[in-house]
Image (cartoon, rainbow, N blue to C red; front, side, top):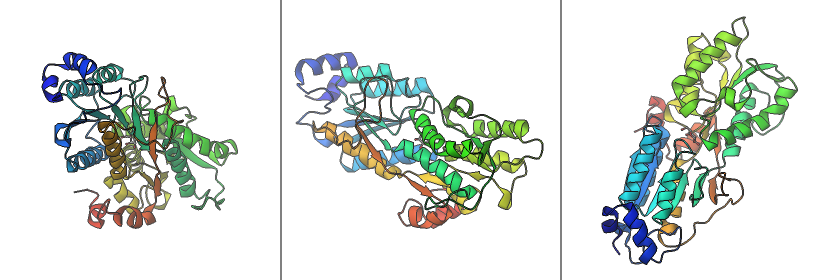
Length: 376
Ligand code: GAL
């Protein structure tokens, strides 16, 4: 049966037809007779304002096309209705599998129901989609460990701990501030939990002091992970909590885009050189890798989007050939309705010394790109 013809008739007809005559089990895309070229994978990415999602989208597309599949790649400009509409369209255009990195992890239940009704498997890409029984698989990194790694990098940057986990020379007390990601992104909670579990003993014993007193995720979260909002919050913190000569020593930042906003606020307030606070990050975005190379940002957490894309493609291909993708975690990611089988990849902390061995030697960036702070 040619699904593309059915797709033209609309998703309702498609759903009925599939139920009536395809014989595919739930969660199986494609038909036995389909060739890769007959199959389309809808890839829905959140935004192009962050370079990582562009790299993710391109990697997934290239890898699927190399295997002969058709790819319908869409970016939603960080706008929830746009993403819902794009996913709706992918379904009506007859996608055989959906790979989705959600903007708001709780906002796609309707689309996922339509996908399930049309027998289209859904793979949540890096961000878990919540509150829906229709998420078939999740590919991501170990997000709790990302938070642990970020907090550890803050401790190492301050000299409280050494890179090999031993106690460092520095005793503090150090003034720090905390940032978290977007509350509607499931990952933001994992990052913050991992970080706070790691920092808490040092806050409790007085080594670290959160000068503003803002320590709950609700107080420190940045909606949509926006750089400008992070800059504004850092400026407000400097005005409210650091106006009497107290200096910021470190900032826990969960994402390079936020780190750049925080760094701008600190630079505008006159912080520079050896006294520049320790600022963490995530994603190894090229502009931030340059800041690390220049000794401004302290660290980032590298998540190899090439490997993530590869896992998404492996999972998509399993569904397309009526197989179940192999999970390496079947406990951690409860989306509010069910535990979603997951494939989690490891992460790596990158300090200045790691840029060459980890990012350049692996071909993720060239030395020229790092020097320019721009990819491509
Ligand atoms: C998260 C993701 C992070 C970062 C952030 C902002 O969901 O896990 O790596 O990219 O979004 O885009």
